Image (cartoon, rainbow, N blue to C red):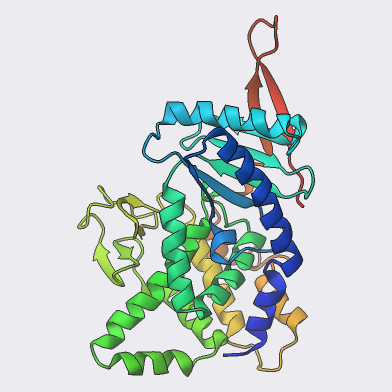
Length: 352
């Protein structure tokens, strides 16, 4: 399925040099973590680990303390990790922060040598999630290309963060995996597995993306149903225990690695996102086979208003997105010797 879409994904993904810098950054971080917890499993998770990172992306690293995890303990470990990183000059005090009170305590910093951002968490969820996605993408590599293109599209519209109502990288991967598993399940009722693979091969990336966007923007009833990506099945919300109550305004995707977890619980801009998907689908349907890469990239990149100001569909789904702010500034309480009370350290992270 060689096409301009595959070439664009290669342009947007991390380069070989970028991957090398991130691996060297990982080596430095892993060495510090293992010096503190010799028996811990330390491994990269998320997009870099499964091969869907974009240029300028950070690294997510997990320290698995092998069964002794607790939220209170993880906050202490995060502080210890920060102290050792600064002590060993892996990072600087001005480019690091600890979020001990977060749902998952995390250390965020920028490697002072390679200028790569790193997030270190102390939980095991990311390891199993990454292994699942990597296995699925290795079996069907065309999904990796689609995810890279869709991540770039989401990022340019600031729909790539759950805390701003969008989709996380893991959530996006499950939408792609889930779509193809649903199609495989549906087609298997009327054809063989060989026929299904032939259906894939007969479509280039343009057709696959258009079909995917049609499913998510029009065909699937998001308000009343939920998706089980691993099964390739759609259930009524609440029947599988992932959605305890009717939540018509929220997307619901079950976590294949944790049946109790609704991955997209915070994606509250789903209907606005669906409208944007319709716009992208319409644009992709008109793309010619000999399209230039710059022109194709402009379709995925936001280059101004996508709807006229007087368009009723835009007004209907407008919401409060204008008030959401990107979390580029991290805050951390610090206490100095002899100080009464606490102060706030303001740390600003710049893109690499």
